[in-house]
Image 1 (cartoon, rainbow, N blue to C red):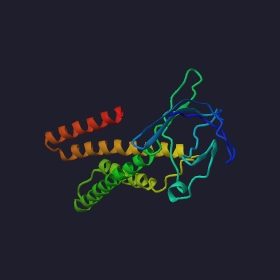
Image 2: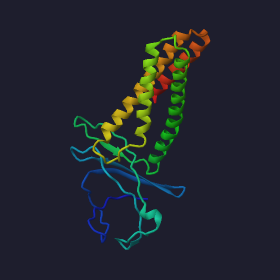
Image 3: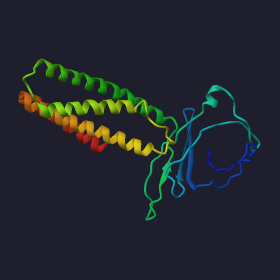
Image 4: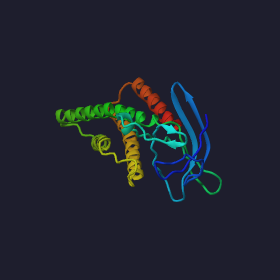
Length: 226
């Protein structure tokens, strides 16, 4: 199976092999289990950080492309290039490698699935803290309460981002992602800190502290490595 590039500006293209408006190299393809995978290194033009790509298929008559079918699947044909970037020599040119059009939506659905239970558990913890604060009016731990309220607000902000996520071609998407990630890391760090503050207040048996310390360390190490 071969892969070539062919520039065209109309529906009547003859599929003649030629260069595109941007450099493409290391072309290859595989067909396995009724799935076709195309690999390529794509060099972005200067001063460009992103690009759009559409997956489509259709009939060929001789060397002329025909119109694809107008069924639901074709009209909604929309794919994504999963890209990995790197640096090349002193010019720091970015290269992107396509690894498959179907992998991108899956991680987002898994991400939401994991975020929602975490948010609900966090809200349950916050509600428990408010209940204890009302019931035991003579007990004051402003540091623990302040961190808890901050976590409550940041959690609400973080979960709302799932419903306000901008499109991938939005010019502010990089800033949005940076804000979302920093907020998430802040929540994790404050959560760890507030639990240790809770241990200091309650003074539980050492076994609880050791178990939580091991779990916390494992989570931190896995986060760094992955």
